[in-house]
Image (tube, rainbow, N blue to C red; front, side):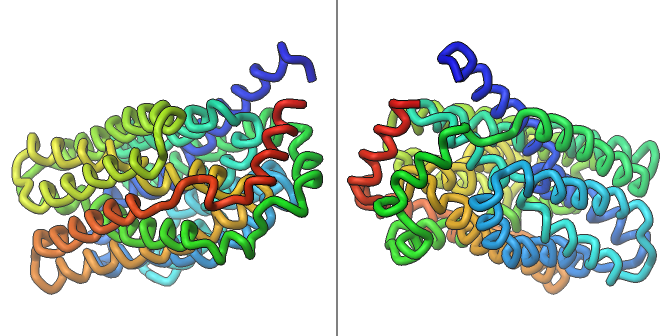
Length: 415
């Protein structure tokens, strides 16, 4: 591969990953779930807790499947995992248009979406992108993650419009088709690892960090704790954002606007985060972002006007890249690429279990008290603790053997 073609190939991988992530589980399902929560529950007479449980089942499925998906990504490469998973995901999402009053069908569909969903997120694409970049890895990963930001701007408002015009069934059918069109063709054509990556891994096999090394690392488990605490907070708040606001007299369109502002802020935050990661110590960057999320959730607990709601959503959105999105960057810096996707899968297990807890407990809190306010304050404290923990992360060279860093750097220079 010539120096002239290498940058073009690298950035095409980023573009393809951007669109895949934009229509993937972490964007489309997460950010539109709250828009569908009321209409689906109203049609079938299901409670908020019952509908929220579907998201919980998906999150638990993600938790179970992520380590295995990570192993497959490390062993088989991205395309051979992403493409079949994306196909199942898109078809399952579209099938929600044919829901019946049998709630087990709703739950089973979300279980299927969860089992394959993480291959459609940044977890599926980050390994391929990371192999092409070193010096500008933070920016490259941020551009991939910005797919979630763009999706979260466009998709909630689009879903709300489709629900109002065509009904929630046609909205689900359309979103399933959109996911297939955005996710599969570009992945087939462009997503691949750097050709010399596997050779570099073999050259450093005796020195680089294995899965076992990572699982015995304090840095890894600190990161897991941060993800767990912040995932409860973020997923609990986001999945109930639309009903929370409409319960307080804010219109459905204004609530969808708040979700879109959250997405716009997350896009800006992710792009800025990528630039900062290439210049400053990652955990300190993350600390500031996580602090903003905690402040936004606390503000949301008292939001009764569109302006306050939008301000809270903007704070949460801007800081969204502070945990799940920074994780792949930190994993590559602490542990290298040899077992990157496998370790990433284990972090997703923690993130997803917490993601299952937050929305369900939020729904339960509302069903018991008729209000979200008190539990939102609890979530804000959880977010604050996660921010403080980020300050305890060690220096990068304590997470991966120095000899492995040197050998990988040498291989990168020779490519």
